[in-house]
Image (cartoon, rainbow, N blue to C red):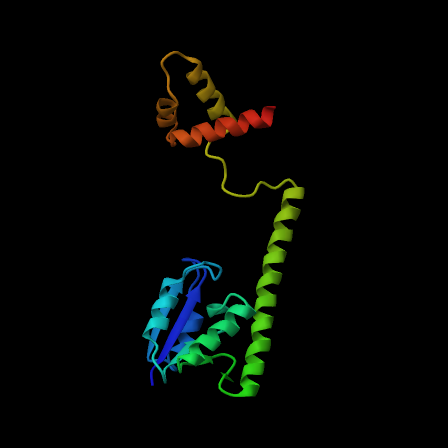
Amino acid sequence: MKKIGYLRVSTIEQRPDRQIIGLEPLCDELHIERLSAVSRRRPVYEEVLALLVPGDALVVWDLDRAFRSVIDALTEIDRLRSRGVELQIANLQVDTTSPAGMLVYTVMSAFAEFERRTLAQRTREGLAAARLRGARLGRPPKLDADQLAYANRRLAQADVTITSVAKELGIAPWTLTRSMRREEARNC
């Protein structure tokens, strides 16, 4: 019987240290994925599933590290169990082979999905509030008003192209075009 650990962090900047420390003593091998839970394909997870044989155990630190929703969690445990593979959730110490363990697993799956949806809702509300306050969200503009005015003056001259002006400003041509369209829409 082999215990294979699956760890996931949502972004490159996030560190899986907490999961590694928790899973290293329990697992024969660890596999780390750096990908959002809502991604359609999770190559490392799929690779781990392919490695599992009857009698093995898939070990995750927490439900939200492996599953996206209650339905996803319940479907996946059924798939694993039909293959003779056990699932262990390290920080919950849940035994999914017993009816009581499955009940705890199901309830915890629901709480994990609730937590994820609540966080997403708070993020949307925070962004909406920031927009109402007039905060500019997203990346800062590449060009300021003076640079756009310069670009317009240069483009009014004969034989001057968007590509040449963009090169002068150190940006891509499509960035200049998009900035000019945005400025034009603002002035209408």
